Length: 225
Image 1 (cartoon, rainbow, N blue to C red):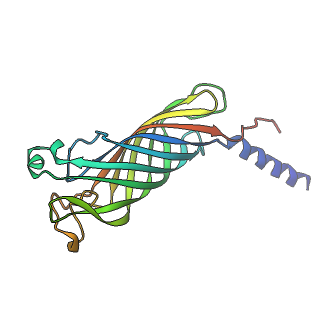
Image 2 (cartoon, helix red, strand yellow):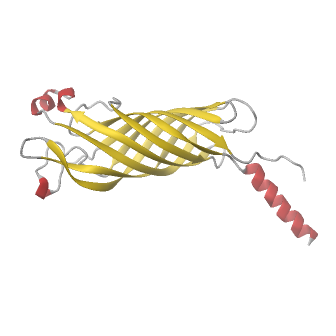
Image 3 (cartoon, rainbow, N blue to C red):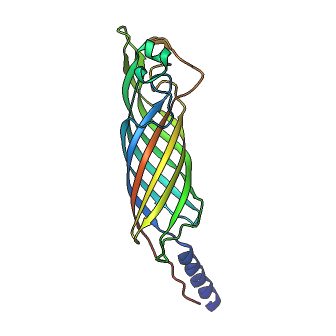
């Protein structure tokens, strides 16, 4: 019985030593659309994006991450190439996304030794987003005809740094490859209009901004038993 008690205590302290902290915070920055309307620049934020983010730092090199992001999206052919400028289409829309995945740190990320921490990171996972499906109306204007959900693959590169013991600030650039080709009205359902542009490529949208999070959690115990 004594050995069993010692084993349970040992497991408890091993778990405590390896436990990591949690983070919760805000995201703010800009968004831009990449598709068949407007500019073809990949990183060109022209709208506002805001959100919340949470992380569980499971080890020094990876964290489970969840986030909610609201991003305005707009595009104007006047900002595109000559062919798009001649066509003259534009739209205003928005997406509301929920994302779950894993964040990988390039360097060790350990928040308990009192030292300043800094590391680049990568994030990917799965994103579900709500958007307004669009189509060209009789006046040659793009308008919404339906509210829909779809999925996207986030591909994000960022850097983060501790601010004292309780806060983390980060900056990231992230592309979302969507499973939809109708964030811009280029590929609507048949009954709502005809398509245009490249119907073989799905749409993308970008987030470029900063994160600020508060950290907390159980401090590891290095007691000897």
